[in-house]
Length: 311
Image (tube, rainbow, N blue to C red):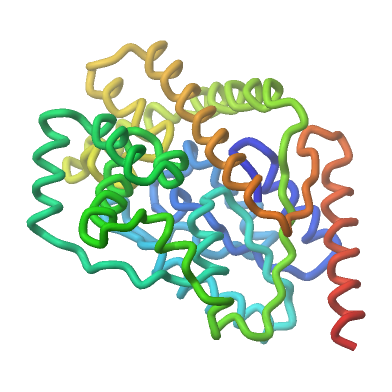
């Protein structure tokens, strides 16, 4: 686990150099086909060397829920174990990690009338205004959501208004681990920077490399399809959301770049906030030159401990 630009892919490769592993991507952006550069997806050579799951499994016009992820991820974990391989879940979509281990809360069903009301209010006031309302009703959830994350803001407000309880309270009420996790042991390795300023530099450098690699053309190709729009989760992904108006001639590239880097830094801040709430994690400084060795050593120690406790 770790914030964006913390080196999670390199850490996964380091683990693959020590054990026979399969990578299960915990990322709500790499699931989309045709979104390769802006999601830092592994290239064809890397995917040929190392098994990666949950890449390119949805068209950008399609949806993929946390329930879908949990079902798919647990199925892939079981398959990897049957092949006597170590499943490594790697990514930065923290809600996916949470739901994987905590299970799905018993939430109110969607209410079409309320959703339409929220859509109408957002059309008039903007999603940041509804995000501010969510912050009053459920500060914990608002902290981890971007002000323009319309889908998640809408759902969180819907749950708050229908149930009279914060969305975060529903997520926290699980009474023990779900039964489908019996026999599974999770080792949490968390890549976190000792100096957040250096991480910010990495974020800017990585985005510039994406621009050089053709990210603008990638976004232009998506927009040219004609069936995609900014309300979709795929288009709201960081980088794509900011470049969307640029390829439409509504925003300069310099401004789009500035907004994308700022949004990525905010994403990293939310990811780090979530990670600090994981007391079982083994924290590793992602800025150290020997972080890959540290990841392997931490995994080896944790796995040895598990074997000793089960023997």
